[in-house]
Amino acid sequence: MEITKKISELIWAARLAQMPSEVLEYSKSLMLSALGAMVAGAMLPTAKIMMRYIQRRGGNPEATIMGAGFHSCVENAALANGTFAHATEYEDDSLPESTSSYTQIPPVLALGEKLKASGKEVLEAFVVGNEVQSRVGIACLEARRHGYLNLSLSGTLGVAAAAAKLLKLDVQRTTMAISLAASQAGGIVRQSGTMSHYLEMGFAGRNGLGAALLAAEGFTSSSSILEAPRGFFDLVTCGQVAAPEDIINNWGKPFRVMQVGIKKYPCCYHMQRIIESAVKLKEEHSFSSDDIERIEVEVNPMLPQVIQYPEPKNAEEAQFSLPHGMAAALLEKRIAPESFSDERVRDRAFREMRQKVHTIVHEEWGWATTGWNPIVTILLREGRRLRKELGYAQGQPPDLLPVEEVIKKYKTCTDKVLGSQKIEESIRWTLELENLDNICRLIDTMAFRVHSHD
Image (cartoon, rainbow, N blue to C red):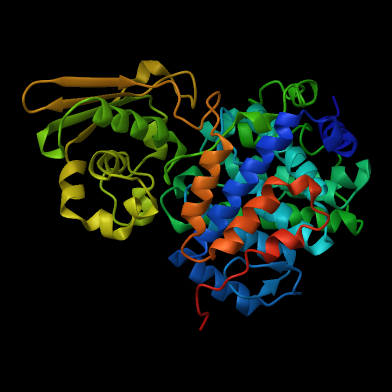
């Protein structure tokens, strides 16, 4: 099967009007979640470094660098805003493909701003880009086992697809865009807990846009790069690609947008169920943090490969530290970005609580992102043994986060820098995005500057 070309045909044929209404509505919730993370991320130390870097590079003023007070070319905007969104670790995820809607949204918005695209065009491109990254991610699950970060690996192809849709490229040039993106796709799970992990989402946005823009100019590449021997699938899965024809056969049945989960906690996806289990135990039983003698968390062998910092040294590592996440769940009244800050990492109570956490790895559960449930057990000094096992956390399919909760999350992310009027206007424009004739009207409501760039 000519996978690369057939994907391009599906991209070209896709129309928002033919997509289910729930896909449209939930896509707007995902947009609002990502916009909030872009704002919150622009206030973090990572953003200050990125803003200085982008400012030195210059670039045509085509799209907004969130929080910077200046514009740059679309590729730079995708690089910066994607990095900002990921830096919060609020990014939305879907499984088993381990991709994120946040990979698609910053570059789609940047290109939409340059093209003065309508809200309908932006939503259509987002759904298409997410479908490509998700379907390719499912086919390439083995890549994750080998250490690739699917979020940016297949995400780069998704961005190229979304950009091709916005640019209204024909099938041939869309094929070239995907092929050019395949040459630039990457991402390493081992970078988790570092600034580079955030940057890999920015790279996916920049490289995917660049691929589509080159294709629009007539740049050529292999038209069978995905399925050909020694092509993308063979290389990233070491020859173990899974049913690549299902990318075509399962397209839109249903759209994978509906499998994206919105995080409640600003840390790695694989910690969400574990933290919620501890929070529920705290709510359901009467005990204080001083009553806790030991905490046991039973997981499969995949999780320690990602959640790899038992004693974090900084905020980045704390977002990928199981003991720190448990400490936040049991010590904090409300888990927020500051729960994973440098200050909390150094806090004595957090240090002591982290020492009580013990991870038990069940090799027999298999190496997979889904199909198993973590078990949290809290042993109290007076002898009680409290146990919780969750199949999924709130906000994760099938328990999708209601739009009211997404609005709360957005306000938490934006209330320090956007005034109440801008917050309400940006919420309204996002949730009515299909009626917006120019995406710039939404982006303009979110203008602010948080750092000096000297």
